[in-house]
Image 1: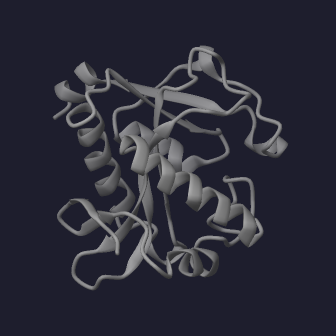
Image 2: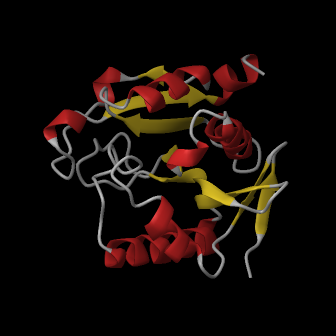
Length: 187
């Protein structure tokens, strides 16, 4: 049984429920959704990611929560925070919280990712008490780059890094950040 983590105006963010992996493979593991996320992957990769995510939530409360429409109960994607653990990321980023999101293509351009991400930032600065929250993308991911700007995150180019796990068009990994003070000033 999934646990509700929090709700927004249109969304419930919850832990994994039975059937979520099957839904993910059908709706999220597509060329369009995975374009900037290392491409379509075999089921075993997501089984491992889901297990790590569930363990992270159980251990620290941090992870990516599944986004469900409040009105219909329909699963739309995920959003959340986790520690930066890429072996390619600079030492200054290691272990710090990063925010992220991904939605099934049919839910794009409805403001759902923005709504969820705003609530995730509020939870990060409020419930978890973080001083700074980071986000990672690439210049080729125009939608995420634009959303980071709408969320108030600013570029931190000195922390950009090359990640050989991603194709050339998605390198370098570009880093954005927002401090608790900057977030509060924008509320």
